[in-house]
Amino acid sequence: MEHPHLDPPMIGVIRRRLAFALPVLLATSIGMFLLGAASPIDPARQYAGAAAFTATEENLQQIRDNWGVDDPLPMRYLRWLGNLLQGDLGWSTSRHEAVASVIADRAGWTLLLIGITLAVVLTGSLVVGAVAAHRRGGVLDRAVRAFAYAVESMPVFWIALAAIAVFALALGWFPPGGLTDVRATGADVTDIAHHLVLPVTVLAISQSPWFILFVRDAVAESLREDHVLAARARGLPARTVLFGHALRTALLPFLTLIGTHLPELVGGSVLVETMFSLPGLGAVSVQAALGSDFPLLAAITLITTAVVLTANLLTDMAYTAADPRVRIDG
Image (cartoon, rainbow, N blue to C red):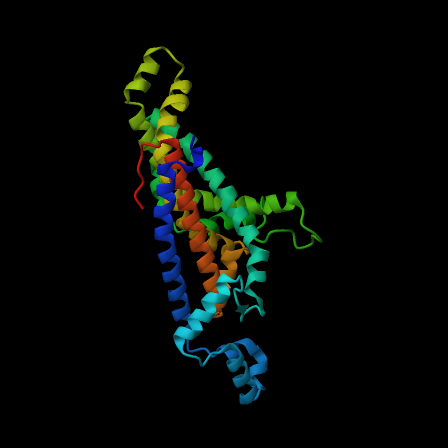
């Protein structure tokens, strides 16, 4: 008897996704390396910082020789790639510490923000979209669609600024930024949760329109299917028909939307972290870009790409497990 996790459809999904992911990661690594190599900024002077103004040219050249800056481009790329495969992500020239340390210290906060936001978006969109579909054409349905279209046209930084102006500055309900109170001597869970309310809400609102509209249309279509009409004809309560039959049918294609929308969620988290001064990878990415810190930028970009590809793989595997008859082409 074959192991249920190793059935042919699942193996096919994994193979196709890996065949797609490896070239993408390789192309991303080449692109980031060439971007850094094309920079006119001298890495030796950037590494030296203020000391570069008093350092001799011999000392700066010694740094270049140690790093192999003047080696041929292919040799430099292969050395850089080899270091990456060994877990050596390089040295952050803007923060003057190992890239791996920078990412390790901040990745958890970004994952926390994205994880909570995704849970809020999925739960809220399923409920709101299903109710709007049940009341299709009514006042609630029109209000939900108007809200979704309006939010979709708003930049996330505008929503963040409006939230800070109203709920932080005018009403004083929530702090305008940071992860803990400035007077706090440690990390308190309640304090962190209070500081995350606005960032999570802003990010969730900015990401919700597509999810809500998708659920609304999918559930509205499910409500017209024979098995749902039969359930309604048997006299089942409207709530049971809506959430127990129509919504369940719409959940399968909803899985694919999660995987395809993840890159936009990650991009939105960068802006939200920057606007609310959160110590995550998003704010560090902006600082690295402003400081031309290509080792840090390259590592964050590759890790983000790998996370998105992994999420897409898991989404496809869940889709295949839910309905083995479906063939997902990579």
